[in-house]
Amino acid sequence: MKRDLVIIGGGPAGLAAAIAAYDKGVRDILVVERESRPGGILKQCIHNGFGLTRFKESMTGPEYAQRFIDEAEKRKIEILTDTFVTRLTDKKEVTCMNERGIFTIQARAVILAMGCRERSKGALNIAGTRPAGLFSAGTAQKYVNLYGMLPGKRVVILGSGDIGLIMARRMTLEGAKVLCVCEIRPHSSGLRRNIAQCLDDFGIPLYLQHTIVEIRGKERVEGVVVAAVDKDKRPIAGTEKVFECDTVLFSVGLIPENELTKGAGIPLDGRTKGCTVDGDRETQAEGIFACGNVLHVHDLVDFVSEEAEIAGSAAAEYLFGGERQKRLIPVQAGQNVSYVLPQRLDAASESPQKLYFRVTGAIKNAVVRVEGGDGVREWKKIAVAPGEMEHITLPPAYFREAEGLCVSVLAQEA
Amino acid sequence: MEKKSFVCIECPRGCLLTVEEGEGAPRVSGNFCPRGKAYAEAEVTCPRRVLTATVRGKTQRVPVKTRGEIRRDLLFSVMEKVHAVRVDGPLKIGDVVLADVDGEGTDLVAAANYDGE
Ligand SMILES: Cc1cc2nc3c(=O)[nH]c(=O)nc-3n(C[C@H](O)[C@H](O)[C@H](O)COP(=O)(O)OP(=O)(O)OC[C@H]3O[C@@H](n4cnc5c(N)ncnc54)[C@H](O)[C@@H]3O)c2cc1C
Ligand code: SF4
Image 1: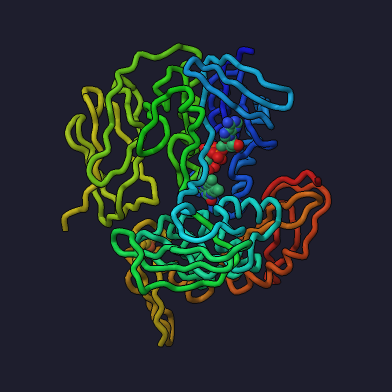
Image 2: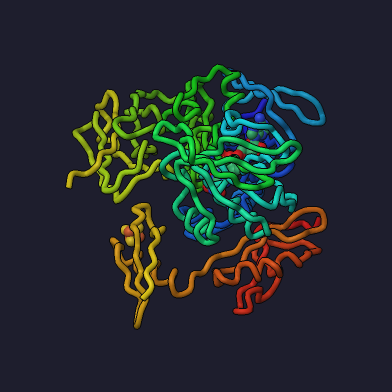
């Protein structure tokens, strides 16, 4: 089977990419989705706060996803559900599996939009038994929101990621008692809004620089031992406290789902755990693009949609015009910056380029500095924090002659 | 005189706001800009939130939300009403599931399309 454009994943990234490619003239599009409905993880994110940037209103996850499902339906874009992509090659061969069997599609262009999954590491190095009652926050979210089942009545949450915070509120409203959230680092990784509205509203304590050192219980969780940690994250003896609970949720971060990408031998970035891409979101394999959480973990789905539109439009351009002549220059993460995306920029591009980045620590009165192009450019930011992705836009005149760019963030001198 | 402190969530700067309540209007300090003052005043006089939850459908849960913010102190009593709801028949986003759910005129509406199954 041959198709012009195959998109792997029918979440917000895959849908927005398909719509953008269609609007640029591509008609032969296939979106492959392993679940029975499109929409991705947003199906289970029933809380509101989505779409503030893009639609200037606060929507729930399903409402946000529906906007894109409707647009895809209007264009009659084909979405093949209940179908797993099991293999990808750098020659754009996509192997799928569903109840009709296994088949391989030869695509002319591919967009990776497989999203991310939850890290489970946090569960591994804790002493004690492995009784029932241990869940990742996302799994708990699925139980409560999709199946209407409450995983437990007395809950301790490890990690202050957004999904854990959201679940603290959700389970409290459903009648559970959330005893506390423990965060091993000195700052929370969740959005401030979520700390205020999910924890403070319900009097749920957040213990920073604390971790779970032991899980108790045989068949079912009966309690946990929580301890303070020192600056090297080692538990401090004598600070242990016991919490009686029947459930522990882990909310310790997300990681891009790149098994297929690795199988195709496409290089990944050690920091983002996604592909390294250029401004078109094209990976190092020609004609294969990536967007959304499979590329880097986003905290706001609005930026996922924007990135997917870049990838979808670029894939269309590739399908109609072949690989463009590009002069790729590296974009580096400088002081206080953990990564910049895209990692490469086409210096021959005629359009302004937006760079997304994350900082390594919170800085108030920050200055973003870009060097390597036409002089040094600076932007002031009231505050930056690792949990919130930042961006700046560069005009073509800035990078036309550049050999490489570097983005750093500094504290403004008083 | 009562003093309360909390972090402003209106922008990433995250000012630590302090509100002193006494006679007359509450006094806000610590805010870098007027948005912080407005936020702090609303938080101490009458905090309001959108409530999202799910209700029982035939074979699946149906996401719902309050159309607009309701009083924060009513969240749990509204949840009790939400728990009692059972929907049958298809719903579109925005369709009213339970009218005036907070007793102050706010409706509970569908937050996803539901095919009735
Ligand atoms: C549990 C959880 C909760 C989250 N909550 C929020 C939140 O509250 N707010 C927020 O802004 N962001 C949240 N996120 C981040 C969220 O994932 C993104 O905002 C957004 O959904 C990313 O869109 P996406 O399309 O990149 O990924 P996804 O929504 O994850 O979509 C990826 C799709 O690809 C499909 N897929 C993956 N691999 C294959 C394969 N091999 N074959 C076929 N199909 C495949 C999946 O089934 C899925 O439908 C959450 C993430 C998780 C994991
Ligand atoms: S007071 Fe103003 S500057 Fe400070 S956090 Fe609130 S909105 Fe931001």
